[in-house]
Length: 163
Picture 1 (cartoon, rainbow, N blue to C red):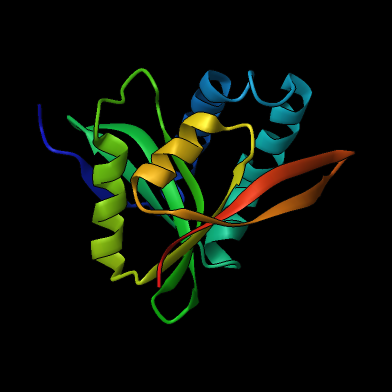
Picture 2 (picture 1 turned 90 degrees about the horizontal axis):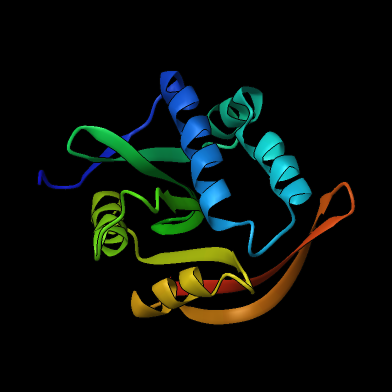
């Protein structure tokens, strides 16, 4: 098996990111949130216009995860302060994932961006992801609820790694 590659995405990669999001969200979220909320959030966050805004306006940096020349996941981050980043998205196709792949990707992005601190939010019912973040040195900083519109609220933990 070829090694994992982390490749910074460009605007022309938006269709790949959107397709991965639709596949991965259907694998992961039906046991956590309703299908209506999944559909709403996918449209809100992964439409071509939304992804373009995230890249151009919000300055989110997207990275595709490639294994054997196939895009198997993606992540996005934005810098909040010098060397302090917010992890907006981190998804790997569960049918392509293998043990240690997520941890390897996380270490690669930390090294590539010279990250000193990462903050993220994760659904409080998303036990698999919470355990992954614990395993990789994150701690829960606080509980937070976010109104995302259309009557939906995200019930999250804010987790932090570093500093």
